[in-house]
Amino acid sequence: MISPWDRWYSTSCCLCCHVRTGTIILGIWYMLINAVVLLILLTALSDPDQYHYHLTRAELANSFHVMDDANICIAAAISLLMILICGMATYGAYKQHAAWIIPFFCYQIFDFVLNTLVAVSVVVYPSTIQDYLLQLPGNFPYKEEIMSTNNTCLLFMVLLFVGCILTFKAYLIGCVWNCYRYVSRRGATEVLVYVTTNDTTVLLPSYDEVVAVPPKEPPPEYVSA
Image: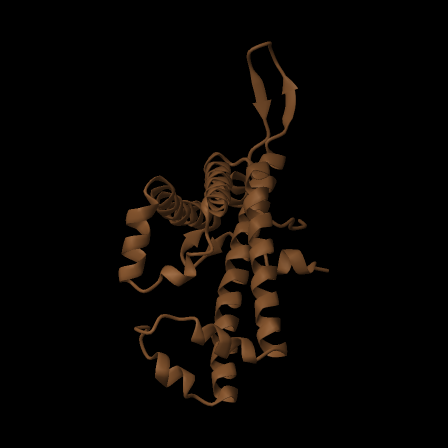
């Protein structure tokens, strides 16, 4: 009987990429995003006057007035930690070290649960959508049209959007999990059989090498005289 974990196991993702390649690309993408966020926070911390001037011109300063230096330092530390976690996942997938992928996988689970709680809060308290729209800047595209939409229709669109995001995040979690299982299985197949000398070791072939070997032809059938 095939277990549910083995049923969803696959070495490919995004239709053509290997799970290792997909995990490396995902880790680099998260590193770039957090690097940009860290750069913005450090710029705001080093030159707050000019930073708030640009925010005021963009009519987004109200969202950042509550961020004092302490909050900016905390956000910068979180971004730096995320860069470290994503770098560990990228290195672990590239060098095939399964333990290095676990922190990034745990972050994905935490992020998925957090977004799920947001979706549940929207269902329980639909008025939070209108409160969020009121906090948007006045020049936000289609703000008036969105606010004039029926609450039921607006709730349905928000839930549909959040559902698509959660589905995509769940797919990425599955890709990283399959990469972890693939790296773990490859590490388990490379087991020492015996040591011939102090400098020479003999290893069992990997799983992919065994599968790639074509099967031997069966012996001819026995014909009685």
